[in-house]
Image 1 (tube, rainbow, N blue to C red):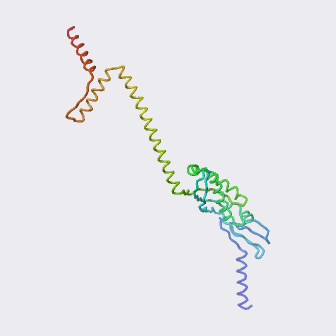
Image 2: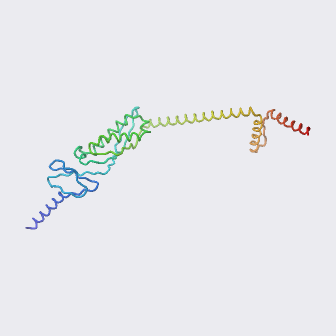
Image 3: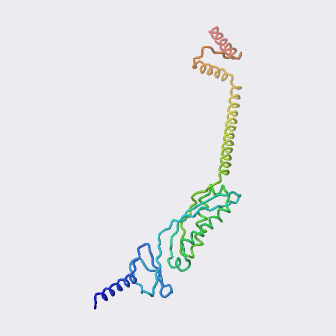
Amino acid sequence: MSPIVIGVLVLVLLVLGSMTIKIMAEYERGVLFRLGRLVGARGPGLFLIIPFVDRMVKVDLRVVTMDVPSQEVITKDNVTVRVNAVVYFRVVNPEDSVVKVLDHIRATSQISQTTLRNVLGQSELDELLTEREKLNQMLTRIIDEHTDPWGVKVSTVEIKEVELAEQMKRMMAAQAEAERERRAKIIHADGEFQASERLAQAGTIIGREPTTLQLRYLQTLTEIASERNSTIIFPLPINIFEAFARMSGRGQQGETTK
């Protein structure tokens, strides 16, 4: 045989060998069709197929991180917002992902966008801002129900960002400021009420025990004296002198008795 013929045969064998021998990585599967009929999934590792008879479609089983483009949503309370999200999914049934849907990644993206608009359109703005975890779980469940027949498992859906109009941001800031002022006034009023209760209790005690009023005057004098003022004008009620006079009278009476 001539070298040309040998070279042609070697080339044909190499081509046939590459078409016959297939190697799949651990995270890959090969969905095999024989004369158009589904045979099954092959891999991982090395396996053989029949050239020109078998056709193989490679499927990646790793988790896909897909960004959902920003969607304009009108919430239940008629507020227009733009929301984007991220979806984490993977193929769990390679055969269904090839046989039952043309492009499982594009199909998952489209159903994610539609579900995002529908679910958030049924929620109010406050719920969208404060109960995001609840909405994430609802989105995950609904999208997973749609993709399950395609052999695709949606593990997580996360709302990334909620964009509001500038006018709405200003209105929310004004609302938050008014709420803070309301709470401050309530706290101040509550403090005044508690202080009035304490003062009433103190007045009742002072009314029952006149000596406490005298002690309070003396304590006030001590506090003023500590401030190093040169002149102190301090009003004194007459009953204080009467108390001192009574105490002095009792003292003199005791000495006379002795």
